[in-house]
Amino acid sequence: MADDTIARVLDVTRVSRRAVCLRLDLGGRPFPFAAGQAVSVGLATQHVRKPYSMACSPADTRRAKCLELLVGLDDDGRLGAHLEPSVPGSVIGIRGPFGRFALPPYRFGRSLVFVAGGTGIAPLRSMLRTALARLRPSPLDVVYSARTPDDLVFDREFRHLQTLGRLRYWPTVTRRAGSAWRGRRGRVDAALLRHVLRPLAVCLVCGPSEFVADMTETLYAEGVRRTNVRREEY
Figure 1 (cartoon, one colour):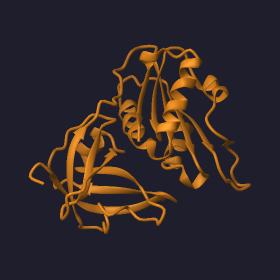
Figure 2 (tube, helix red, strand yellow):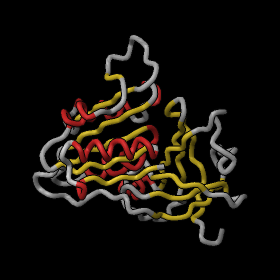
Figure 3 (cartoon, helix red, strand yellow):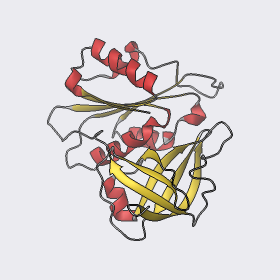
Figure 4 (spheres, helix red, strand yellow):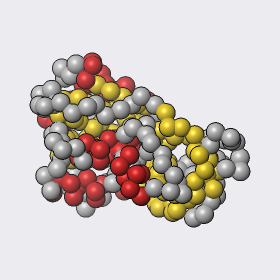
């Protein structure tokens, strides 16, 4: 507990059927981290901490003096004992940051492909927002797989950025989707990645272990160099 950074919950916003965005007020204190890193958090009144990647960029945190974490819900729709109940004003202990999953430095001619499954979009959003703020942004693609359209977190944000010409967005859903869904259905496969990949692409993959393993092998099979695939799993 002595090593914890203490923050207070600003708000808990439901962002999909299975996840919430937890915003934590740092009380004006700096909290330096690299895009893609994670922290372990839990209520300050108990000792259990669990890891979550920052869903905001370092610049977002410097500006707003808060952290955004994407927290998956359990089958009962709860945050888990380490965070229940979290309401505005709840005191949270934060440990970290930690992790080596990082955005590569800018290099002329290199594109970035973010491949996410479920809540694995969190660190990729942090990297994406950082990459977009660069003086000379790389060409960007976001490939995002979720169970249903309602599980596509930050979907509106990515679609808006695509409309502005800032990135290409490739969402797909693997389970039920009503007739209103006009997008892709099914898992991310070699055909989709082949269509997305540009020369000299660096691919950053995050999601459940099985998803990450499958995407990694598919990218290798499509000719992406092993040194150009970076991954994080949970």
